[in-house]
Amino acid sequence: MTISVLIADDQAMVRAGFAAVLAAQPGIEVVGQAADGVEAVSLAHELRPDVVLMDVRMPQQNGIEATRALQTPPRSSDYVPRVLMLTTFDIDEYVYDALRAGASGFLLKDATPDELVQAVRVVAGGDALLAPSVTRRLIEDFARSGPPRKPTGNRLAELTERELEVLTLVGRGMSNSEIAAALFIAEQTVKTHVSKILQKLGLRDRVHAVVLAYDTGLVTPSAG
Image (cartoon, rainbow, N blue to C red; front, top):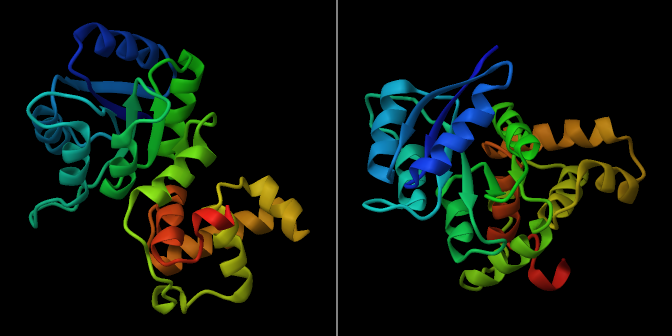
C-alpha cells in the first residue's frame, strides 16, 4: 500500500529536499506541496493524502491553525489526515498547541532522512511519534503550559484497573517495552492494552492519550 504525502512548508528548498527524500522511498508518494497553511488545507481536501508533513511556522495560516482546520472537516467530508509537525527547535511553544490541535507526530527539521521516512511510515500506520530527544521534556512542559486541571474520572470510567495503569505510564512518556518491564507483563500485552484504551476513549493515537492523561488529572507533572 502506497503512503501519499502532502508537504507544507514556506521554504521552497525545504519542500524540495523533503520531497526528494520521500519520493525516493518505495511505498511513498509525494502528491503535492503547499507554501502556507491555507494552501495546505485546500490541497489536503483536494488530494486527500494519508499524511500531511506540516511546518509549524508559515505565513497566512500557521501549521497549528491548519492542523486544527484539518481535524474538523466540513460536514460534507469525513476526511481527516494524519499530521506530522515539523519544527526547527527542540522545544517550541507551538508544539504544545500542535498536540491539542490534533497532530499525530512531531519531528525536528534536523532529523536525518531515515528518521523522516520512518516518521512518515509510523504516523501513516496509525501510531504517534514525538522526537525521541524531547519526548519526556515535551510532555512535562506541555502539562505545565496549560491551566491547572482538576482530576476527573468520568471519561476514564470504561477502563479497567490495568488499562488505567497502562494509560498512566503512557502519559508519563514511557514506551511499550518500558511499560512491560514496569508492570511485569509482555510487550505484546501492553500493545493490546494501548489499542483497547484508544478504542474505548475514542482517541486516534498515543499522543492524544498523553494529552488526555493530563487533561483528566490522571498524570501530573510532579508524577512524571
